[in-house]
Image 1 (tube, helix red, strand yellow):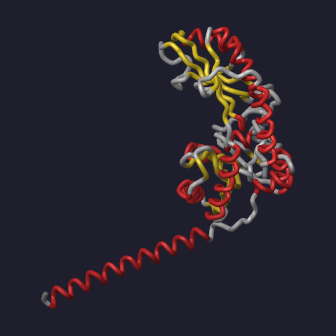
Image 2 (image 1 turned 180 degrees about the horizontal axis):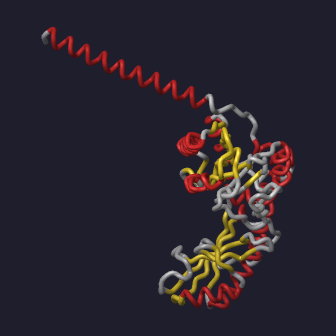
Image 3 (image 1 turned 135 degrees about the horizontal axis):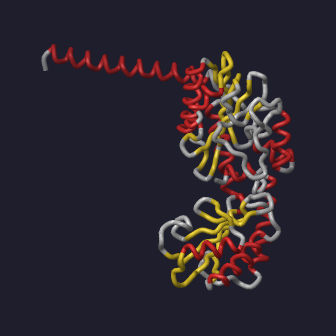
Length: 361
């Protein structure tokens, strides 16, 4: 090998090392810049609300009283059953709905000058979710009024992006958190604002803890209706509605007094009841325990409705193993569910509550 070839090889190696070194320096510089925007937080809102308050609802109220989170959800946000509706635009009253520190992490966006809601609304669509985690948007008007929805006729001094820490898709990931932070940065650049948020590692650890808690309490109980021969979907739907079910997306729901679903009825193929012309041979009744209001006869109530529905449809009601229900099984299962309802309450996730429905979605 000639001296020229050796020299060219050495030069190539040197250039590669220079490029790697420059990339390392750039990465370190960006990380330091990102970390400067993430003040650390050692508080665990979930444990604080669930353990010290003794009950989830009381814990949430205590957390809200300790810190007032300026809030705002986009125009697309709607009040859920049992949830106070947002106030009218321009009202002197604050919206009641706020970020939930037990299951959401907040990124603050503070505008240098008030920004019109009409200018913010076009960007609300991009702030609905990151990956599989929904986001809620809150704001504070230039008159210091808390909003759970952006109104075109108001101006806002700040915004908050509340990102869900965990749901049935798992804990918030580093990629999802980075996406949320990037969207906050985009808003800041567009509207001359500064952003603040917690340390990424602390966020991921909080999400993992919440996910572990939820995984230990996540329970669903099912029943199956075997219709024998296929029955017209329209007839099945009519019978179900006559029994007391109401529409809930592709499913039907048996509502509690506050409008929250106690249990649901779905086609085995997952299709909507009014989809296509095919018949239905099998239906599923599902009691989603964390998302259903606590009830001394949660399972027994579903069994009663299932038997009524089976009689009307000339169907057979069986458990999730395909076996007929054993005599007295309702009482045994309901006793076990009472323990679970108590555990959910102690964890700060009361069954059927807005918080539970959010993290068990």
